[in-house]
Image (cartoon, rainbow, N blue to C red; front, top):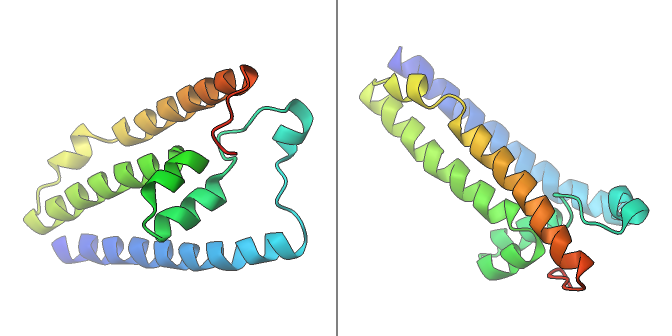
Length: 135
């Protein structure tokens, strides 16, 4: 059973690396076809929670955390949450202790969604008062 869970763990990380590769290819395609404008921003002049996400991921991959926060704080915080729970999951798989999964099923997702909504509100309140962090 431990081996099977470890195989799933490795598979999920392999898929994550593939998605990261698609991200790099996709950003170049978006720029090539000029699809980089956010339709939500174009219609409302407010930032959606994803605005600046591509630049934030790019900055984070260059280990420029402050710049990543400036573009979109969801990316480094989401990555931190992912990394924290990823280490916990690996530890529980290696110890063959599955109680972590019973006790923490939805907490990471709920925390991330809560932060996403809060970030959307705070970011746009500042924008309404003329403070734009993405400039």
